[in-house]
Length: 366
Ligand SMILES: *Cc1c(COP(=O)(O)O)cnc(C)c1O
Image (cartoon, rainbow, N blue to C red; front, side, top):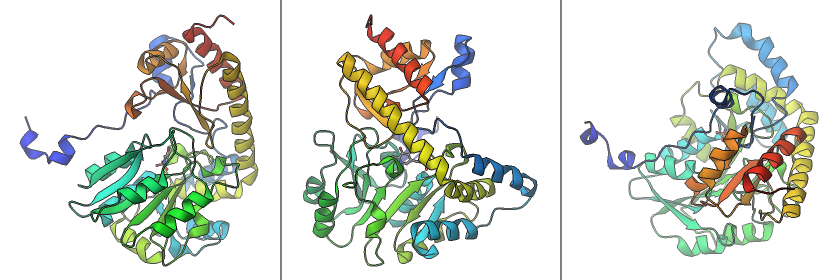
C-alpha cells in the first residue's frame, strides 16, 4: 500500500536475520536447558566487575549518560596507548559503522568489501544510499590484492573484517602492509576487529599498530564478544582525530547508555576475566575440532571464537533439527553457504551437548 513512499534502496533491503531467543525455543519445545551457540557470545556471562559497576550505578539512572563518555574514553585511551580524540564510542560497533557510511558516502559512491562476511556491511551501506560491492573470498580468505585491482573512481570505503565472520580466517601482516602501500588516496579503510581478542597468532596484525593521523584507517572493536557485554551495546572506533571529529558531529549525544559506559570501564579492568574467556574459547575450539576430525567432518581453521563447519546438507533443515535437540546454531544459508553452519565455542558442557546433537542429527551412530 505504501510502496510509493519508500526509496528504492530501502524497499530492496533484507533485514538482518534474527537469532532465535533461548527462552522462546524452550517455550515452544516445552524444555529447559536449551543452549545457544549461534551469536558468538561470551559463554561465561558478563565480567563480574562489570556487573558490580552496573549495580552501583543503577540509582543514577535518572541522569542522562555522559555524552562525551569522558571516563570510558580516558580508560580506553590508557588501555590502548592512544589519545582520547582518536576514539569514538557507539551503541555497539555496528552504530559506528553506520555513522561511517552515513557521514562519508555520497550518492553513487561504493563500498568494497568481501562476501561471505558480516551481513551488516551490505545492509548499512545500502541503507545509507551507497553501492555495496562485495568481492568473493579466495579459498575462504580475504584477497587484498584483488581488492586493490577492483578499486574504481567511485570507491570510497573499504570494509575489512579481520578475523572474518563467518569464516574465522584472517589476513596476515605482510598482506596487510602490501595492501596499505598499494592503497590510493581518497579511500577510507574500515577494519572491523570484533574478534581480535581471540587471535593467538602474532602474524595477524592489529590495526591499532597502524593508527596514524595521516592514514584514513578506522578500526572498530566491541565489548560484545570477549568482554561479554553484547546486551548492553557498546563498541568503539579508533582512527585519526580529524576523521573521527566528523563522525562525532553525526553522532546522537547519548548514543552510549550510562550502564554500558560504567560496565565497559570495569570490563577493561577485568583482565582476569578476559584471560579466562580466551582460554575457555581456545580449549573449546580445540575440543570441537578434535571431535569433528574424529568424525571426518570438514571445518575451517579459525582465528575467532567460532567454527565454520561443512555439513554437506541443507543448513536450514539441519538448523531446525538441531533446534529440536535444544541447540541453537547458525545456518549459513543467508551468507550464501547453504551447506555450512557456524557454531561458537561454549562452556565444556555446551560443547559436548552440541556434539551429541550434531552426531544424532548427522546420523552418526558413535
Ligand atoms: C559481533 C560482531 C560485531 C559486533 O557488533 P556490536 O554492534 O559491537 O555488538 C561487529 N562485527 C562483526 C563482524 C561481528 O561479528
